[in-house]
Length: 472
Image (cartoon, rainbow, N blue to C red; front, side):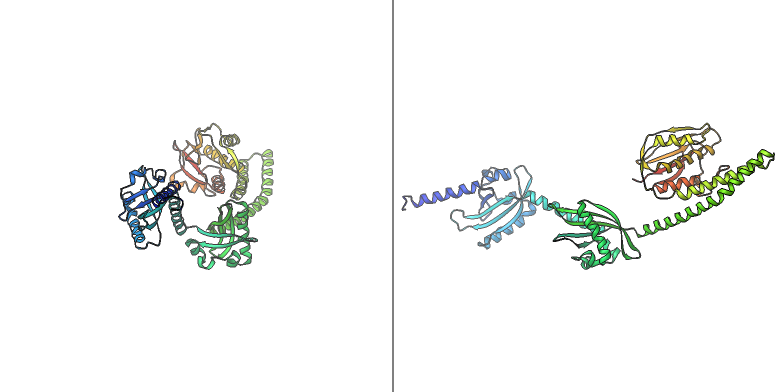
């Protein structure tokens, strides 16, 4: 050689250079014979798989490949041997020295005719984290598909496209959405809300979509979107999907609340008519009633008669009925303003305003909850008055909590027969002498206005027990 080196020295120099490069790279380099025996493995195997190179050399590589992946691995080897010019890549699980399985991506090259390698050259890298992420994503996608296809609420996906202005395009509708609206994914995919629902309704939808994007967090709202008479009003929750730093999609979950809205409107109209009726009765009856009460009182001062006291009692009962009728009409309205209420404080105030005679109050538990304190005073005052009026002897009234979110009022009086417990909550029902029959009806309307449930049962000591199940 011109530089003074021999051919043998050149070959040795090239071999050393090759091994140095192989040993320094991050990828795991392996050479296997055509029968699968490992002839060489680079030092990177210790870092990646926990083995020393000598622990693998001389073994068949298949011994360390997961049983479910061995066939795929063998097919790749056969392909490389039959097509020397084309590299092949395969993903298999390889057993780590600690017994666990690591996902390896191996690129195989046929170097059988290479005097230096004389086998199949594999360049491998650990892709366990990527595969675990892919598996997680796949499982999430399967769960997402199951949710999308089976949930009763209607779900819709909207692409958010950033151009000169934000553009919203429908991407997909759930089967439930398609069933409830008659629209299909094929009909709306890639189209804007204005394209699908017209300019006016589409503009209203886009306004809510813009609001969600600007807020960068989920929003809830009720919207009117006339699909048909049975599907017109929707309660919708809209959430943004963030990719990187940008909102790329909106996911909407919506429920057809048309029936509920119709009932609420009907109930509102009924309440308005009832309130108007009660106001008229109150106004038209109060004046002549006051005159009659005044004249009867004067008559009682001027003359003695066994008929005067019954007249006064009847007039006072009429006045109580007028007041309770007006209260009943106005207590069913939905609660607009909720306040924090201490049970002990509320019960104390109510007990002090009722003629409780020799009755006793026991506050078993302390509790703080949300409600309208002014209306709830009617509830407790009526229940306390009801307990006292229906007991022949001294009665004990208890107030406390039950369950996760509920409270009760009970007494140790005579109680209410099981077949009468529904009737006592209806207007006009009274078993107490002189009662108007509206007290427990008022209790029921106020409880329902809070969104709670009222039930009547037997008390701990056999008396009456009223339970309020509060909404969560």
